[in-house]
Image 1 (cartoon, one colour):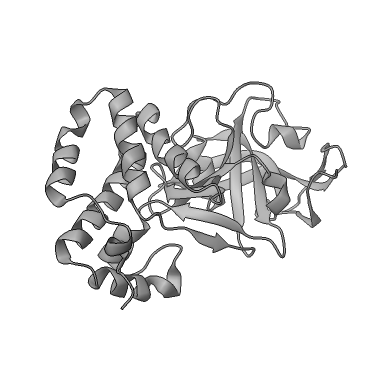
Image 2 (cartoon, rainbow, N blue to C red):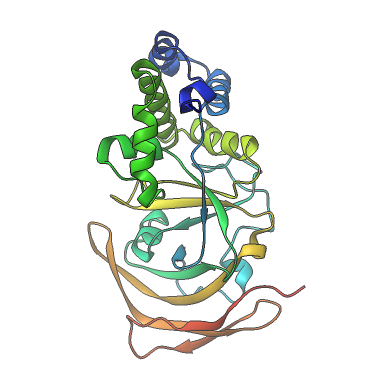
Length: 288
């Protein structure tokens, strides 16, 4: 018989793990980060190949009269070091994306404001490696993972094959790392989870995690290094966003980008239906 998950990658003994969790809040930040790094290295990090077929959104809240003119204004900042975020340390360049437009607007703290939303697509024939944080505990609690889909039953069987206390330790670790990432707003600590995953698994280019601001939604933090190898801009829309309540939005006075020039300059056009998106055909990416 092949080894079980916990035989192949043994978790911490339950008593040791419990002691770590109980004492975690009292630790100085440097020790919290070291603890997270240790747990990520021990833990079997779920990661999947993810291909085309979905749109991933990034939103910016704008000032009165402001309108982006280039792709550089839609992506990560290139004119200054990256600031500390929930899933990135200061100086570590990433691009934050959301699963839907409403999620992106919530994450950008848009109320009734001017906003721009860019859609990003995975290129045809390409895939990215995504590590979803908390996938194992989600499968255990709900029977189905967000990213493992039809493989969830197989993973459940693999967990059931483990010794009970070892399975508990594995699941508690998975839940604890999720909590470290999304259960508070101390970004010095939360960013360590994603950083540790990126350092452990260089093949992973995106970490997925539950949105704190949008119930049931998912965010992605994507490494910028090599980003355009796998990604393209699918559409860009601009207008007055109106928050209707509970994380739902509608747009008015909408414009869309109907073309992007080779150097990334945006060509704006009016849109007669505020619910309509002007899709770029083909999606845009920089030329080398």
